[in-house]
Image (cartoon, rainbow, N blue to C red; front, top):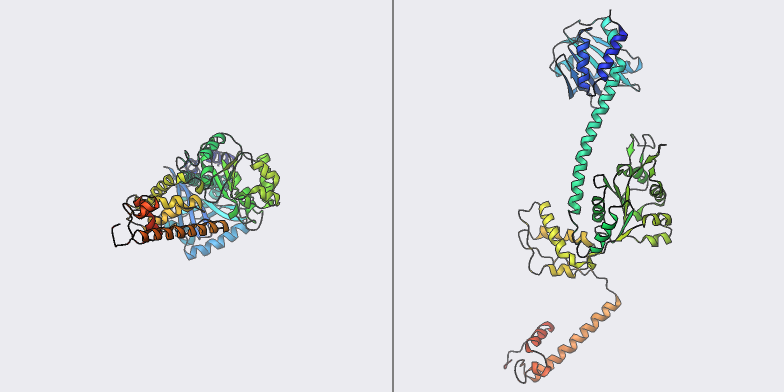
Length: 517
């Protein structure tokens, strides 16, 4: 006669003595063979949404192994499973005994699908919150291998196997998430470094003062406010601050405050608990929580609603958050970098931005100059973007610049800043495949704002050119079109004949063919 308490204790110790479920099952089957007919033990989970049984782990006397085999159910097996699940959840049975597998649609189907011989089955249904989650299956080769005594003894193991299955599923989920996070982190870190580059283009010229400030603040934990027009590269500078700090091994989480609907902003930033609102089917960590031990970059901070500004102020003051629907206070170790292309001081005056939040964010402001104010960086930026875009477009070789093509870029005003330049380079690579790159046709539209003073100045320039043209033409008439030599137009006007020729060509004055010039 088997002592049930001793039996229960030994199985529990063997299951809990191993972190890996397959090793725990292997230890169990070796012990079970001393008291029950047992050739193999399986841990299976029924996935009702796809109508299939997933085998998680198995063990026999030789070894234990993890599995991830999804076995689709036949129509007959599905119907039987639906009936069994209804009975199990409404009138739970401690154990299911099947000594004639040919007579049970589910067992017959699964044994055939797994290519296993006829076996008698003892199964412990595992029910979680009134829902059938799966089962622990003990198999013994042949028919009529189990009796009621075996079933009663095996039924005592429901609790340890329930715990074992829960732990196995959670452990598997953790490992999966860990792998996903490792892959995502590696990919995202690579993307951030690809976007920002190993060094900032223009760091020694147009962005020299910006980089000096970055070096001053990077090693500290102070909030940083990046200001500048759209497209100046505020995100790149934020990346540089993070990667130059002691937090570089931590996460860098970027949030575009203007791209998140007002109704979702709290959930996105602070997270929520399961059931906190309609559609909250599971717990969710917010961006602040994901940025713990690292940096959060709040781009377009001026677009943040006033209600969310209040909660952001609390984060800045206490470094604490609460998920929506949660009571737990979560402490954070994060650095906040904010960016805006708007005038926050003006917004404060107009009651569109909280003054106390402005003071909290404006600890160390850095203004990124527009590209038109640092045209010395354009040649280096052009080369940088050509090389990068050529790789992205998978061009066989990096194109060269057409002679003088950079001049058009240097005189353009760049209302879209560095981002506009990047897009223009890509457009040129597409349009001038296999040819030296040109930009005159791409930046021909005027970008300067035209005002009355500019128009007046241009009109005066036109009037002056007309007077000069008229004067030169009158002198040419006196010299019969002669330009060079004594008595020529050059001598009468007191200018070098070659200079006069250039001026005539510019003003559209034809060269006369008669006489000596």
